[in-house]
Length: 118
Ligand SMILES: Nc1ncnc2c1ncn2[C@@H]1O[C@H](COP(=O)(O)OP(=O)(O)OP(=O)(O)O)[C@@H](O)[C@H]1O
Figure 1: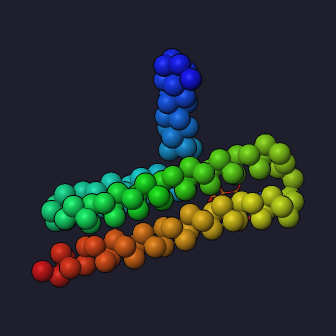
Figure 2 (figure 1 turned 90 degrees about the horizontal axis):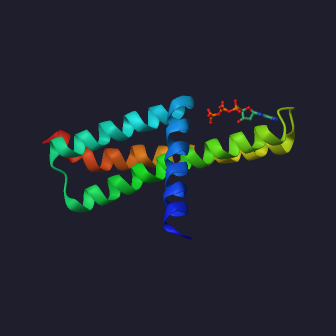
């Protein structure tokens, strides 16, 4: 892979992220929550280890939402007619986001609750 094709792949990936933020309401919710968590991390001066967990969690949710959107678009490309496999694929992909998002809330509470209490 030469340098210009590497740059092109990078630009396509950025285009994918921007398109997802523009079109997907859930993605904008995740980005807002991520910004709020990062701002809280700065405000409370959380530790290096807490930043590692927080950043991994933010990256996980946003990456999973990108994959979920990709699955939705790919399914819609194949068929927009009701189909049990289309439902299965979309529900499983959004289930993956839901699992990670719920655990992120728990992680956020575990990180920030001690700072808020003191
Ligand atoms: N072709 C289909 N066949 C059967 N069920 C479908 C189909 N398309 C969507 N569904 C059902 O409708 C739900 C919502 O699908 P839709 O494509 O509107 O996603 P969405 O509302 O944009 O999801 P998200 O909120 O995760 O972005 C799916 O999770 C699935 O249960």
